[in-house]
Amino acid sequence: MSNELEILRSVEEKNTITQRELAKRTGLSLGSVNVLLKRLIHKGFVKIEHINAKTLRYVLTPKGLMEKARLTYKYIVLSYNYISGIEQKIESISEGENGSKEFILFGEKDELYEIITSKLKLMNKSFLFINDIEELKQYNNGEYVIIMWNPDYIENEKENGINAINILSMK
Image (tube, rainbow, N blue to C red; front, side, top):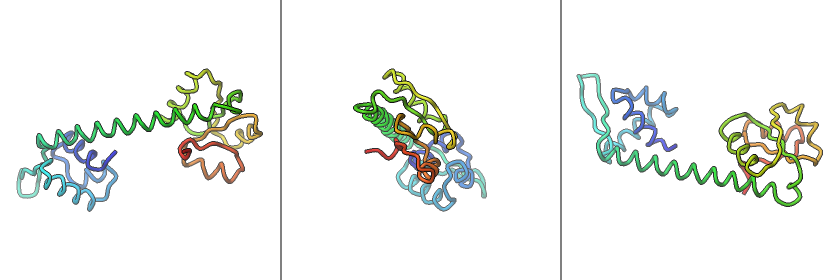
């Protein structure tokens, strides 16, 4: 999600939020939050109200609400396209010589796992889920299609000689 959208969302949720709280909430540095807030203020998306000498309040303007809606829409479209691309990759993998093989899913049970398993179920493809590298080694014989998606596992896969398809790096 874009940093500006994160700032706009956080300001809308809690307009008495400090820059430090914004930094903590968004994972950005305090300096980045300061620069982004100045940019959003300059664009007219956020305005500052002085509560007292030491306290500021950030308020989303109507223009800021529209920008937040636009950025949210853009994020949803990008996410949908990404999910669609993952599903197309699953279809591509299951065609041809891989069509009759069983799939091994190697990773964490996260959102991508849900997308991959939903697509495989729709295609009536059987699969096993494994998240232990030692257990995975017994399936690394060419009889199975091993699919991975978690960047944390890529190094393990390479180090252990696992022949897996990284769904995130396929073109």
